[in-house]
Each structure stands twice: as structure tokens, then as C-alpha cells.
Image (cartoon, rainbow, N blue to C red; front, side, top):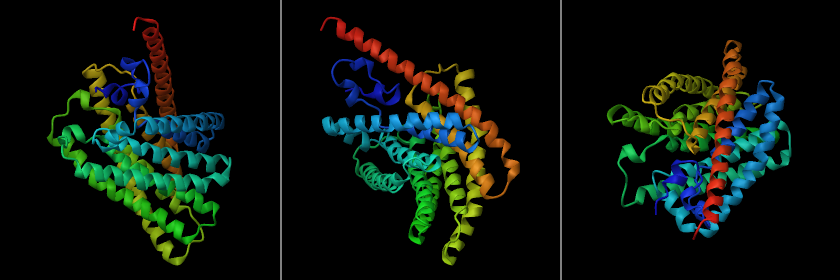
Length: 365
């Protein structure tokens, strides 16, 4: 069965328009749209663009349960297809978007002050998803008999291990503030922050090996590579949140102080990646004239841009570095424009899929 359309293309499967083909082929990383929409919403709110922030928050409140209904329907009807996706190096890491999306939505709930009682439940859901998906993914990838070569199996989505882990630290910090900053929860947030950094060091070393010592055709320069930057951007956000916690016990204060230089390092690493990624994508689309078509991977570009904006703003506030504030003020519009283009592309792809579906349904069977 050829399932590459649903995974690498638009997320719709026009080649299987009749029946439930679209569901069996549905992209496992579809929650990336919630991640991107949520973080751009948070960036808008933190920078005073309140109307944009609320509009995107409202949109996420509709997208999140919609995607869960599709996920659960796919699990119920096609459990084998779901397991195959989860156990493949090429598609398995994309499932972790569900963890990060839950964390980002929870941060929106905290920031906008809507239904704050849902925060502990969202954290519990995100943590449960993390445990199930991370261990299933790593276990399945380890025991798999047939494994792809690195240039085929390693891609930017593997850094969702970092993003998912850091999202627990970010949302956990929101819950800790609400709950009076209990020591055990603050400690777990700090542990997740450092665990995410450990994942980043391990995976980014493999990424650089793949980039520098293996062929890199223009077609291989895809949206998920932007998670190279997004992963350390969310680590910066988690560190900034931890830096702002007040009234901690003395043993936690020592850990909090250690977070400050690490957070500076995270921000520097995120900033480092932006020019290199921009040059590579310009090389792909301008010099090699690779067409720019909508695909789910474009949300993996929007999320890092929005995350860098939000993280830089919070880091500047937490570390009292006002000279950094012009960076998120300008970067927000880049992230918002990227979101508009990706969302418009998704709507057009959905409309074309419906058109093809209708045409196939009216033709001879």
C-alpha cells in the first residue's frame, strides 16, 4: 500500500478519495497545526496583539478536539496502520506532536485565563501521552528488524523528542504557579528541562553527522529541519519560565540559578540556526527552483518561528535584557505571516481534496 501521500503531502489522500482511505492515511503529525497556531497566539498576546491572540486561541479550541476525534477514529478502525506508523523511523516521531500540542494549548489556557481548572488535567494528559508515545517509539525503533539508512530514517521530526519533553516543563511551570509552586512539581519541571537538553545533544550530533557527511539533495531540505531551531527555542522558553518562579525552597533555588546559564545557551543555539536554515531553504527554492507547495511539514516551520518569538520575549523579561525586545517585536510578523500562508495552503489543499472526492464519487465505479 502506498501511503506516502498522506504522510509527506497535504495530509489528505486524493488518490484514495472513496471510502475511508483518507482516514487510514491520515498524517500522524497533524497536531503540528495546533502547536503552531497556539505558539503564534501566545506570541501575539505577549507582544500586545490581543485580537490576533484571542482569534488563534479560539481556532485552537476548535482544532484540538477535531484532531482528537480523527485520531481516535483512526486508532479504533485502523489500529494496525497506526502501529505501523508509530514503529517506522520515518513517521513515528510525528506522533509526539500530540504531546506538544496539549502542552501549548494548556499554556494558552493559562495565558488567557480561560477554564484554569483544566490545567492540571491537560498536564496529566500530556504527561501520559509522553510516557506512552516516547517509550513505544523508542522501543519499536530499537527492536525493528529492518531499519532504514540514516539519510532516510533520520529527519528533523526526531527532535520532537526534545519539544515534547520541554512542553511538559513549560506547562508544568504554569500549573506550578497556579498551585502555589509545590517543590515536587517545580523539581519535575527542572528535570524535564534538562532531560530535553540531553535529548537535544544526542540527536543534534546525529543530525550534523547526516548533514555534513552524507549527500543532501535539495529535496531533502524539508520543513521539519526547522525543529533544529524550535527544539532549543522551547528549551529557552522552559528555562525562562523556571527563572521567573518565586519563593522556592533553598535546594530548588540552586537548581534555578543553574537554569540561567543553560537558558542563555539554549537561546544562543536557537539564534545560531536561523541564518543557516534560511540559507538552505533559499538554496532549495530559489537556486534549485523546487516548487513551494503546501504540506504538513510547513507547520514545522511556523512553530519554531513562533516559539523563537515567544521564548526570546520571555527570556528578555526573565533575565532583564531589554535590548533583546526588538527581536521578538519584529520576528512576530515573520511568524504570523508564515502561519497565514500555511493555514491558507491547508484550506486550499482541503478544498482540492473535497473537489477530487466529489469528482471521483460522481464518476463510474
